[in-house]
Structure formats: C-alpha cells, structure tokens
Length: 387
Image 1 (cartoon, rainbow, N blue to C red):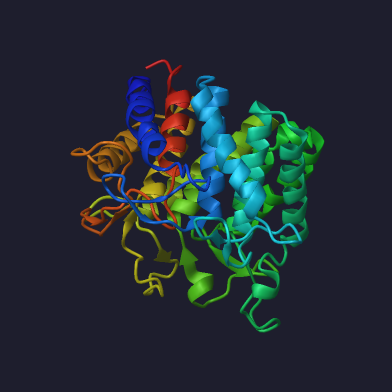
Image 2 (cartoon, rainbow, N blue to C red):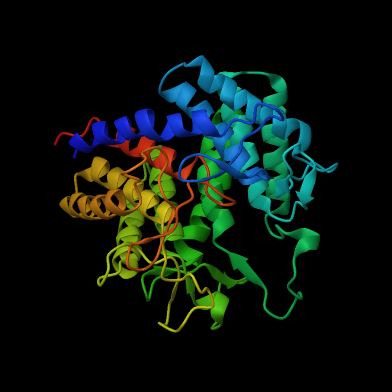
C-alpha cells in the first residue's frame, strides 16, 4: 500500500495544484476563479464562498504540512483578504456567492459558507498568526454553534411544526471542523463539542437495523418515511467516518474507531454499483425511487473521500479488506475521473456508466478542495505503512 503514496504525492504536486496556481487567481479583484473549463479557461466569474474558503484552507494547509512555499502562502492570503473584505453581511454571516468584484449575489442562507470560512481563517492563522484571522475564525465558529439548531434561520422554507427534520451534514462537518480549529479553541472545547456530534453521527443518524446512515431524521432522532427521511448519501456517510476515525485516534478510543470502520464498509458495500462500478450519489433506504434525478451519477468527491477513509483504515490496522477495497476504488477513480489527455485537475461528474457528463474542472460546487485534499491525505496516510 505504501507504493500508492508516491503516486498520490506526484499527482498532487505536479498536476493538480499547478492547475489551480496557473488558472484560478483573480489578479484584478482578488479571490479565485473556480468556474474553469477542461483547459483552465474561466467561463463564469461569480465567486462562491464555500469554494473561496476551501481554497484558502488548501493552500494554507500545503504551506503548513508540505513545504513553506511563499507562493502558496500568498495565494491563501489573497483569497482571505477578498473574503475578509466582501464575504460577510453586517451580522457576520457569510454570503453564499458574490460577483467578481465582491458584491453579494446570494444571501447567507447556507451555514456551510460559515463552516468553510472558519476552517480557512483558522488554518491561515497557523501560518500567518495575525490576530484578525483568529478573530474571524473563532467568531464565525461561535456563530455556527449558535445557529446549529436552525442553520438556515429566516431562509428556511419549511413550515415549522409539521415535519421538523435535522440533517446529517452539519454534525458531520462539525466533527472535522472542531478538530481543525483545536489550535484556536483548545482541547477542552473540542472534546465537549465533538462528544455531542459524535453521538449524533454514530447513534442518531446511523440506523442499526439497516446498517446505513440516514441523511435526515426527525428532530427527535426518529425515522420519517418520506423522500427526505429515506434518503441515503453514501459519500457523505463514508467521509464522516474518516472524520470520526480521526477523533477516535485523538481520544484513543479503539471501540469508536472500529465502529467507524464497520459503518464505513457498510455504506461502501451498499452504495457500490455492481453493474458499472463506482458509488451511487443518492439512494433510498427502502429501495424506492429518489427525488434526486442525479441519483445514479458518480461524483468525484464521493470516490476521493472513500479512498481517504480506506487509506486511514488500512494505516490503522492493516485490514486486508481495506487494502482490497482501496485498490478497487482507486482503479475506478483514477481511470474515470482523472484527465489523462490534459492533466491538471480532475473531472467531477460521470454518468452511471462512468462516462464524463461535464468536462469542467471547476464550477459552482467543485473547486480546489476534494481532489487535492484527498491526494494529500492518502499520501500522508500511506507513506509510512509497512507494505
């Protein structure tokens, strides 16, 4: 397995990161272009807070954990300066999107803008310890905790009281975000926050009977038999399990790590497409049709996060099952998502048969994050494995 480490390192440093360095920086207005064609041409100049913040985090992380390369630090600072100047409303909530110059386009309805902004400024503070970066990160994180039980606030379209649901995504992200911000928050705060979200992820959203993780449950933690209540997102659940593995290692909790490993395999085995290969995007826990028309597409981040989870499982206990699944998912992912003709960043969207649906390299949802983060995580995780 350690032979894969060099492959992932080479792809990260010689293909994927150079693509974003060459094409994404907006030298006129600051921040990053993320809507990039197969060849790096900018096809839309709008700026999405998730992707701006994720790229700040990515380049800060590279500077901190790979090499103190000044151009990487400058890239992170450029994105952060744009976000600091334009990204928030007067209450400190982060918008969803801006135009090229930074004027807001979409209101701060989505708390994940805040999550990735907190993560970005927290990591930037570690490499550029300016107090304002720390303050932005910690204030944003405090706002997330304040909003977590009603994350959309006034922008929530649901009528209260009829079918109150809680969604898996925020507890999942808090597992990782809290750990990311431990240098700023302190270990006691992280332990307090993560203990509660681990319980949600591993006990409330995990359905012991089916062995599957539900995307939505009632506000009392119960199964609701409707489109939302039956919804599965295998990639989300698998990604959450490597977050939980990291927390289990931090807590020295072997039982938690082993439970995360078990749940990860259950999602992967259920979500794998035996006919065409790859992992389904959405599924229904009862096998009914989903409301998502893209349910059988194969997405880049689902497969890359699965590779991270499998690499971490193997590194922890050298489980041959993890090695076998890693090779299977690796072969599918590298064959179908990687652009063998042009190099650089990978494709993101395939149809069920594994053919490229959109030949973009970045867009409204895909930026400089899942591909490079996964390459980095797999490289760092496997480089010291015995075989």
